Length: 329
Image (cartoon, rainbow, N blue to C red):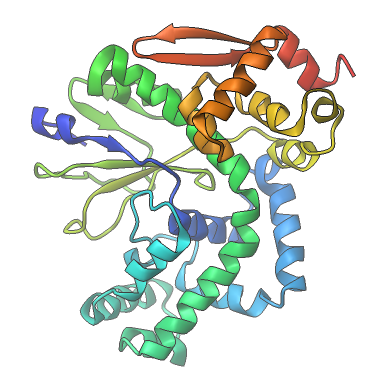
């Protein structure tokens, strides 16, 4: 992907993870065995929860629409960092019939299987079929994605803090160079290369590219197939193995008993330096509350704060790491 100076100026990073991209990518993870150390426990937990909720059949239907393969329809992921699932679903349900027909036709050209009756109704723009799809996506999201939003948003906020710091220090090109921390990514002299699943050049034609971080993206970045749509590049957040166990143990662990659950969760988020604003957004706290928590942890020697440009970044100390790791419990 080549950037002009105008395109660099218009480059943006999504303010949050996108609910429908996370939904689609989590459906892919249920269909493959990618990143077993990182996502194996999540798969087992979610399959059990889907079974208890009576959603296994609905989920199988969704995987037919969103297969882990060379193609899945763009209309399933209309967002660029939408803050909530309902906004994304409203956009999805407003997809023009012509696009539904074209994308579902293309899907079944790839799968080469018989077109199920419910998919034919979707391709025809049947309002009842679209509502059923929206209901299924919403129900699946409530079980497979929403319970994990604290971990997802913490990872996204940490990543955003890194990108923001790079941009403040070195501009948009510095921010793109920072993506070299992702395997196979490289930015040199106006050209961004990434390990996309197929050989493809994403042409911006002066439009603003939105970089969308995705927790459930594990193999490679993704982009919309239809190049007439506003361009997005979805990239992995690469959570560390054990994230689910840490999330599950957060409320009642010894660390939380010692310093309080909110401060323990804030401390856990600092795998990478983050600003007070990022911490507040990830924890759904007022900035003043997040600032007070950070002050208490700093006075206890559990985190350090330093100014970088216009922002103050917080990071854990060795004492904070030892507390989280259980060495002091």
